[in-house]
Length: 556
Image (tube, rainbow, N blue to C red; front, top):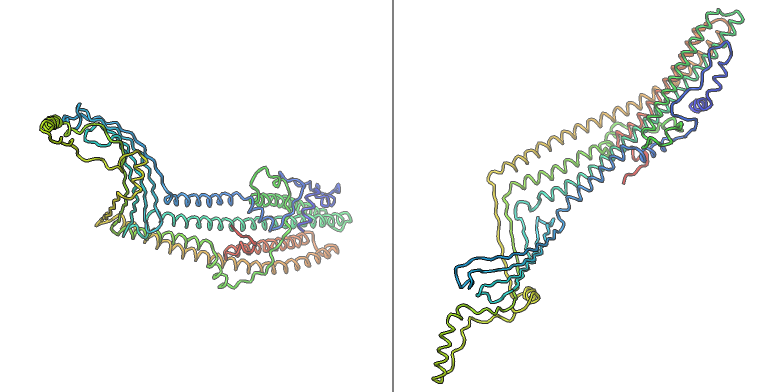
């Protein structure tokens, strides 16, 4: 029937036009206009429709971006464990007034510093440990007469760590954020799966709506043909004088009413076709908009025989919505563990190991104390010479170790020689006796967990209702199909009998048209019952979580 209807639309319904083209008959049915639809046909199976929807549907593409965004949010959260490198050069020139000649002979002590510091910071995911390495360099010059080296450079290589012993050891904010973001990535994938299943189900529903609309239009077209046949019979009998002329008016009125119903049914076909195209096409310029869609599948094989309890068990195991709630519970439990941990005191162990180095150029400035006694020593040496005594040695405050004399390279060498080591360790203890913030966070987590468990029960109930309704829909549709088929057979027999009686003058035009309407009504009920069956099968697969498997679709 559907193929006949499509061919009639393609050819402008020539058969129907020929049957109504007699001059004394009602006006022929003109070619039915379908806005934006050409005569070119696109045959489409249900599987092809689903594949086109998965490829082009904009809702799926929008949800796909949510997965990418969630993955980037997770990547950003993991950035807390990226190594941080820093370089801090600085230059200072300081002139300090001083009233002591021991600090500066001219009353101005001048110092010039150049710092060249490098550092690396690394937060680790292990027990909340943080590491740092600092390489600190300073070059300094001074006119202070007590400075033996000027300019001189100092370097320090410091390696340290900080380890939480109580709070933030098992969990901390950064690690919790990463674990929660990982759950959110999985959540976005589950949401995407739910969206794909929904799109598949709605695509199948739109496909079956189009099938039903075409079959309904076919029934309407057959109703026009039947009315035309009765009009022709009535006209022949009026011409032969065996039927009152008024009867032809009744046949003509019924014919026009059915033509109107047929045109309306064609409009419903276009609307159903556009609804399906909306699911399949991502661009309004797609040429598929201008093609007539001809479904090649007209009925779902009725092999689904689900036991209620088996269907419920399958749904509770497969449904993505339940997995989504479970993920939210897992994420909440992670946040609850952070709230519990926040109630503990903060005790951090810190330790540092340092190697130092120093080197510079020996200054030529005389020590103030040595210059203070230089005159007396010179006089004593003169007297010692007259008396034949050995001269006194020059005053000295000790020499500079050779390892400290040199440039920056000598300084670095002293750092890595290991001769100047330092070690320090300590504890940092912080305790909030009444930590109301942490207590409130924990209480909120408990309430949220209870709410999610209640929500899960609500979702389970909703799924159970969907499964029950889908199974009932299949059973109801099956019985309706059988009843409609039996009704159609009986109506066909009654119509054939009534036509024979009419031709022998034992029936009326009204009764024949009534029997035709009964047949057409039975056929429409068959169309609706089959539509209900097709939709119920799709809903059952959705409610039990078998949509992807039934359509052999795997999501990456």
